Image 1 (tube, rainbow over the protein chains, first blue to last red):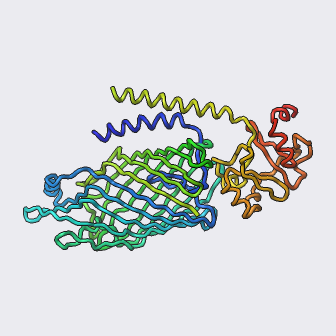
Image 2 (image 1 turned 180 degrees about the vertical axis):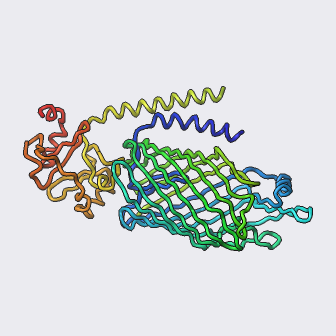
Length: 322
Length: 141
C-alpha cells in the first residue's frame, strides 16, 4: 500500500508535467539521447564517433528479516534474499555509419547481505554468500533503417557471451544457485525494435521493445527469457544546443520474465511481470558529455511463486562521446 | 490534506511554466534557417535555427550555411557535400523575394523559414536582407 501511495504522489507530479510540457524534443548531437532506465532510443551515433558510458544501478529489495527468511523457506522449500544489489556497467559504442552503431557492455555485480535458506529434513539451514563479480559481456548492434520528420526507426540485435563468473560459493563452500551468480554461463541473444520522434522542437519520445532469448548455461540451468517494453518522454527545458542543458525524463516500462528451467523443468518460484514508473533527469554538460539519473518505482508486481519483490531502483550514469 | 496542497502547488508550478513556454513561443516569429547537418540527420530538435552574430557559420562554394552548434559546423566542414546531397529543390518558378531572380535555374541557393513557409534566395546577401525585415518583403509578394 505504501508503494502505491508513494507512486500516487509521483504520478500527480508526472501527469500535469506531461500535459503542460507538450512542446518539443531533443537532438542527436552530444552523448546519449534517452536518459531513461529501460527504453532504447532509435537514434544512432554519427559515423566515426565513439561513446563511453558508465552507469550504476541500485536495486533495493523488500526487507526480509532472518525470521521471515525462515518462514519463506518453510513455505517454498528454499528461499534466497538480498537487501540490495548494485550493477556497475561500462559500455562502449561506435558509429560504423550514421545509421549503424555497435556496442559492447559489461558489468560488475555486487550484492549486499545475500542469504540462502533451505529446508532439509525438517531443519532450516541458512547460508551467507558474497556473489560479487564480473557479469557476461554483451555485443549489441542498432541499425536505423528510417529517419525523417515522422521519426526514427531502428532494429536492435545483440549476443551475450558467457564471460561472467558462475562459481561463487556460500560460507559452507557450496556453489550458490546458478540464477544468483553474476554470470549465467550461457550464450543469449537479443532482438528488438526502437522508435523515436520529436513531438515538437523540445519534446521527444522514445519507445522500444526487446526480447532476450536465453540458452542453457551452467549446471543445466536456463534463466528464463525476458521481454522489455519501454516508453519514455523528455522535455528540454534548456535547448539541447545550449550548455549546460536540462531535460526531465519520464518513463513507463514493463519487464516480463519467463520461468527459469532446471534440467528442462520449469522452476516454480521464477518469472513474472513488473511495471515500473521512472521519473528522471538528463543534463547535457558539454556537447560531448552528459549525465542522467532516474528512480524506478514498481507500480505493479506479479512475481510467480515465492520471490522477493523490488522496492525501487535508482540509476545514475555519465556518458561521453569522442 | 498534504496531498491536496501538493497537487495545487504542482498545478500552479506547471501552469506558470506552461505559460512561460507559451510566451517564449510567441516570440518565435523571426525567420529561421535550416541547419544542413541536422536536416541530414532528421534531428528535428535543432533543424530550424534563429540566426544571430553568435550562430556558427560556414561558407562553401560561395554559399553561407548556419548551424545549431559548433559540433554541427565541424561535421559540415569535414564533408560539406555529404550534407548537401539531400537538399530539397525549390518548386518551379520560385523567385527570390529580394532580387526577383529565378531560383530553379540556379545551381546554388539558400533558404529561410518564416511563418511556416520556406523562402528561397539566390545568395546569403539577399537572405540577410530579407531576414532583417521579413514582413516588408512577404507583404510585397
